[in-house]
Length: 393
Image 1 (spheres, helix red, strand yellow):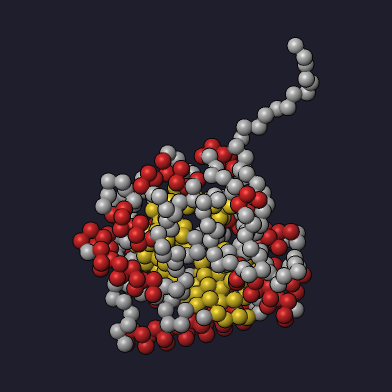
Image 2 (tube, one colour):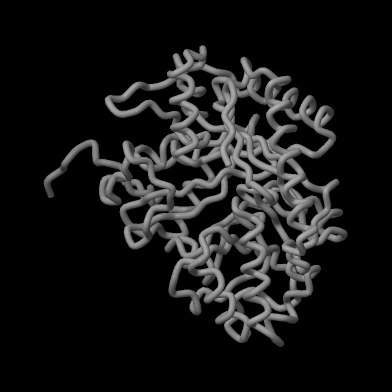
């Protein structure tokens, strides 16, 4: 269900929350992986059915995720390899020699991957999320503080509100609150009907007071090239978060929306109704569209630094880091990846896309992905000084 308003788009489900994260250990699913894989698959399917916006599982079991000596690896690989709406998050090392296909697995660590895991990361088989604070930062879902990590089984979001970064100063807060309240009221009423009919899965706990709203930004590149200040943006987002939290009486997560279709919808809305932020759009011959996310368009060839751009003023306010899906013409080395990361102002979540990796969706009909060989290679840090003079012996 998509609800449009003046400068925003709300994505929500009809009779369930939009997205969710769950603790594998708190749900006691870790034991089911060993004793009853069929029951695990059933509960996994029920979780996906009530989370149309996606679901994340925190791998907090005692056994290492994807361990080469573990019998759980085959179960995890089969369950996650072909489920694009489900992601698994772990803070424990992986056995990269066992990984042959890309998995929806994100590794959380304060430093970039090293050892065998680094090879899988550079090949695009797993993603990396920089751990900048305690708890979990789940791209597309929000932040899980350490206290909630210990006490809560999981958390859900009512929906996701996407806003173009150039429109943040002109947003009508009251209109946005009314739209969000209306969407939430419809969902709660439909959920009560579902629960009364016995159609809510018993294995999935629902806690209304811990269900939050998610506000996401898109079109950050248009805001950047139009001369906008990120410090001003940070102030506006803080005001928006505090105002919505007081009026809706729930927690507000701040993130980044990288959906090209949502970015195109917001641009079409701005052009159709003549909103003032339409002046920041870069008009092509095709339909107008904001650049998804905060950085430069990852689908078009440009420097790596531009596609992984994340301003420090904004990074401090985000509940979770944006995902930079970096297309490269060849598999980068671990050393060159480290040199690249050291040059960034703030670190996003990074997933490499070498030629063997298909680009992620959704795809926009008017803006296709450039071929992998068209993207610039990553700098290997082995620059050579040219000779000033050629001297003959």
